[in-house]
Length: 141
Image (cartoon, rainbow, N blue to C red; front, side, top):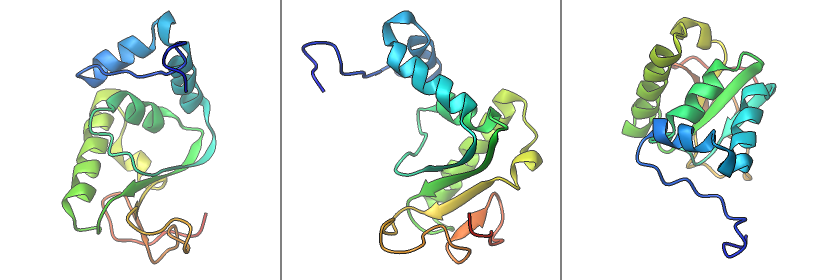
């Protein structure tokens, strides 16, 4: 990454709406292309180490994409921890923004404990993965 030559892409806007507006400008083609690809990605997507705290535009894009058959959100801590509930609340808010029925996501949105070692076992196993708003286990990917 060479900041001097402009190949470093950083968006430091204070709100998700301003981030999205900045990304959609011509000056950030790389980030615009990345967001566009998330809109058309298909299959299964796993997020790891992302809280979506100020990234509503990314979360909205993922939840709007009906080509994604499963979205696994890594969430630090246990399923009864605060981070798990905060992320679920962000998903509810996103559904409201994008006019998406929350029930339509329940069969394809899953959470796993991202404090597990992703290379030291099957962190996406039925024993460690939960559905949106439930403790129901899910099948292997």
